[in-house]
Length: 86
Image 1 (cartoon, rainbow, N blue to C red):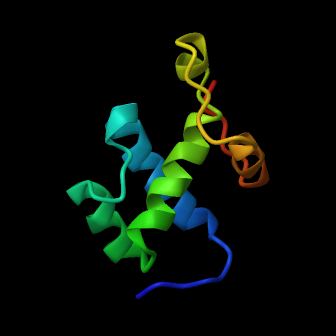
Image 2 (cartoon, rainbow, N blue to C red):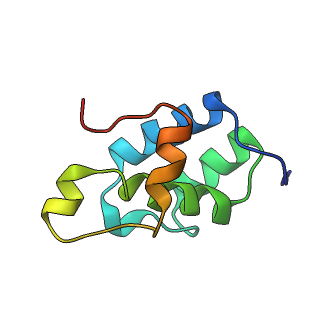
Image 3 (cartoon, rainbow, N blue to C red):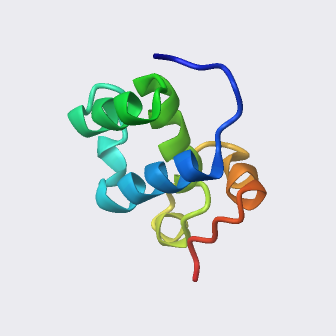
């Protein structure tokens, strides 16, 4: 069931866990793992995919490769105290 409310820290951590397992090119709403995560946390596959790309904006390894992720996505990482560097 889709929700319009703010993401919880727990939801962000679960999606971060998925982020750490998926290659950048697989962060798509049609990916079965993204769909499954969306079902688990009660979000749409689109919102999970969007959040995954937000995490990409915080990832120094992707930045080194010239991949920037979602514009301003790094703000959400900071809001939830998520640091992909350490």
